[in-house]
Length: 155
Image 1 (cartoon, helix red, strand yellow):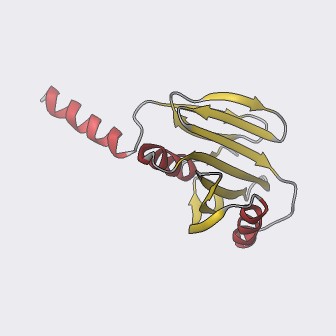
Image 2: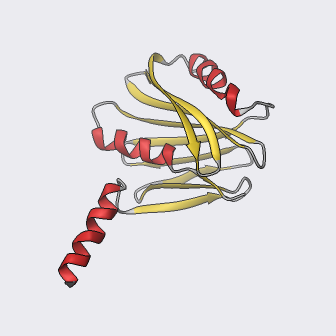
Image 3: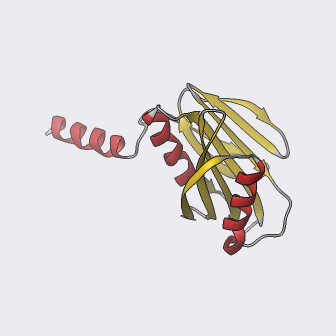
């Protein structure tokens, strides 16, 4: 019976993506982000929160613009164009965990980029979340999607 319970727990954990992970909170904005356990915070200021992991970089940037969740798609596409992302595709809406937003995928300088914009409707905090990794790294792609889909507002 104990072996069965252990197997069920491992299957449940592995279905979430990365098993070993760390959770960080950007205290100023009460944003919680869960990343693989090899990530380290490299910058934490009033407007920027950055991390690096094995083969991945993550940047969160606050932008002071009065924007609604309905308009986030336009803001994300404009931001992706400003970054000069190439081959922008895989556009998706983000809903849940207290945040609404939109993300696109593209390429820049030979790297895959997931560019998202999110809004916390309670605090009206708007931010971009950018994740950069090697396009051939399928685990990084899986991890990046997990990160984007599981950012949580603690407001």
